[in-house]
Image (cartoon, rainbow, N blue to C red; front, side, top):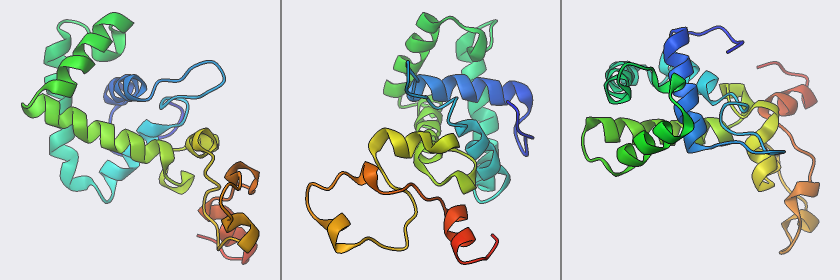
Length: 167
C-alpha cells in the first residue's frame, strides 16, 4: 500500500487486499482489485460515509484471522485462500456476511469513480468498456451497437477541470 491509511492499519489493509484480490483477481494484461486500489476505496469509505461499519470490519477481520489459523490470510498460499473464500461464500454465519460486505465494497471500489479511492487508472471502466462520467451522450453515441470504448474516458475530476472548477 502506497497511500496513507485513514482507518485500517497496514496488516488489516494487507489482509483486505488479499481478500479483494480473491474476489476480483487480476491476470496478464488485466488488473485485479489489488492493482485497482480497492483497499484504498474501502479504507476511505470506512473513515467516511461507511464509518458505521467500522466495528463490523474489525470483527470480520478477527473472524478471518481465526479461519486462517496461525498465519494471516494475506500470508496463506493460493489454495488455502481459495478454500477459505469458498467456505465464506456459502456461510450463513457472521464471517460469511462479512465476506459478502467486503465483496460488495470490492465491486464498488473496482468500478466507482477514482475520486473515491479505487478504480486506479480506470481499470474497472476499461475492463467493461464504460466511458466514465459524462455530461451527456450524442445521438450517435446513443445508437444501438455503438462501441462505448471509443468514447473518451472521463472522471469526475475531468468534468470539473472542463468547467474550471475544483472539487
